[in-house]
Image 1 (cartoon, rainbow, N blue to C red):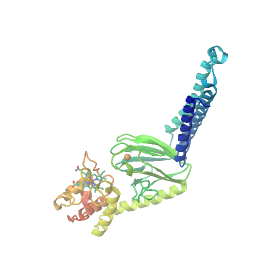
Image 2 (cartoon, rainbow, N blue to C red):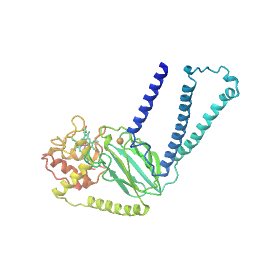
Image 3 (cartoon, protein in one colour):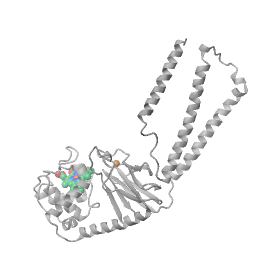
Image 4 (cartoon, rainbow, N blue to C red):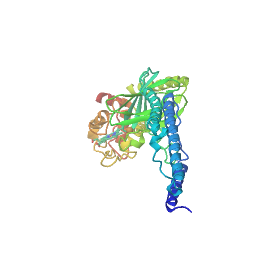
Length: 376
Ligand code: HEC
Ligand SMILES: [Cu+2]
């Protein structure tokens, strides 16, 4: 017959084991870290596996010894504590052996960890350098050796879509098999860029450059997000990288540069645009850059972002200059950024025209690229 205390102990043990296994069942769909797709994240992954395995073995040994002792040396079985333990050879050497074992395990992990850490912090020469700029609430990527700039905005998807809040309109494109350096910074508040499969996250600090790197080993699309709570739109700035073969990357660069050159030529031509053209372009520019704050219906968010529908600037014929000025130069100390450096004359002319004619606004003017050029 079981002693009362033993009954208690076995009940506790069974509850513990049941809890452990039921929580494992819940997490069955995701046991481990995201599978790595770069040399650096592979190193980090291996270090994680090493520590997990060492930890698991130690846990199994210690738990096993405790359980063994609980069962075999229990009072009910008539066990008597060994008063002479410290006088035997094992009792004497245990005080030396235990720290030696612990230290050697520590040093195994530490040497691996310090070599991984020095890889993370390495500044070797890179084949491609990309400046990653965080801003509320999007990522801008500038290729430092090529005249290419990508603005990655959240792609609007239905909540039922598997990629809801995880996809962008224009992802960062990178080659596999090349060393890529990232220079991280921010144009407003703290952001934090990283993508688990290919690059550890690092913080984006305004006025400061942080550096990290990758060497992607597998083609594919990799997704991360902003990891620093950066305001109300924090959840709406996913980071997406499309990794392609070096040849495909070279082709992509050529096409991309041609597209950019065409857009720039279009924007700088002293062409007079018709209302329909400006409105269509303006809506696209608005959706991409302004909608996150001023909202699709132009109503903004009361108390945070002003409504543009019926606004005393956007819907007032006397305030056209003011409207252009706030879009080009922004408003210091508020979330309204200067769009002058980010958008070309045509984009700004189009979006201002759009705002003055959409959502029931009747200010009505058509703004042309030359008006923006004059206001810069
Ligand atoms: C990050 C949020 C944010 C984004 C994105 C943004 N704005 Fe604003 N905008 C603001 C805030 C905040 C103000 C109010 C500034 C102030 O206090 O006067 C503002 C003010 C304005 C105003 C003046 C409205 C009024 O009645 O006072 C206009 C016009 C405007 N924004 C146009 C734009 C355009 C065009 C874009 C896109 C190219 C844009 N905004 C993108 C936050 C934003
Ligand atoms: Cu952010």
